[in-house]
Image (cartoon, rainbow, N blue to C red; front, side, top):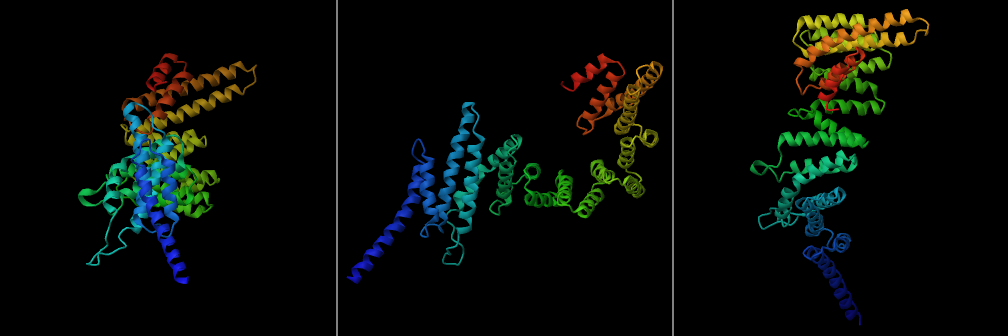
Length: 413
């Protein structure tokens, strides 16, 4: 009787194991039925993933990823019919591909061949599927970013970068194209930052900051510093910005960020000392005097700002940025005079007219510099839109409505 009992238990255990292996097969077969019942396929594979008999089998996890692969391809086919695919369906499918294929890779190759080398059973199929899905991870990630789905965007772009760096894809089979990789790494960094994924932001910021070939390297330093500030570590924040300034001496925004920080904590003199040291150490750098001038514009010391900018123009009269900042200083001065006029008592018409006349003269002077900047500033300059906005506003303040309308049209408004 005892022997019979053992036999029954053994048969039952074998049937359970067979049942779970059958679940893997059934889940895979479901993908060839039309319409595909994804809910059924996932139910079957999820049962197999937690059963001890099949949980450690690479094939189980490959089939789980394959369900996502089929789901993505079916949703992607909508594009052929000029329909918009559902981003959330694509995200879910791609996440299922990556998460399960990564687990399959960890389990694949545990068995060794006669020579003691790993015996891979799923790698070839995973490699093929990754090649096909690779660009979709990037495109879906950027689309989710544009929809402000930052956490999901980060996940897709993180997976894209991981596939590009996968050791399976080296040499002639490399998927990584530096320019595209750098751009998606940049998007991933800002997705993590905007999604308030702090640990992920720091990790990616460090990676971007270390990527010597990336045009976005400076952004890595900036967001790394910002995370330090968010954590209350002001010393690390200042140190990281100084490191960025040393590495990117022509980037006025990095130096400007640090200067603005000093100003925000009422350390104006420290900001000036810092800029003077930078100028002394880098006498040929055209950016630092402009940053210093912009600081004096912010504090309302237009005389000092204009003196600095006059020196910049004398040194390089062909630099559109110098003319832009001089125009900006004059326009701000004109704006302040106008506000001062509007604060006068209503009865003081003479004082009002005098100040408004002075204000208009400042805007006319500013226009002269803005127009010089407008004529020579490259279309891709980061200052160009600011220049157009200020030129348009100055035309309006000077009563030149037709010119203001012309600039408005140039801005596409």
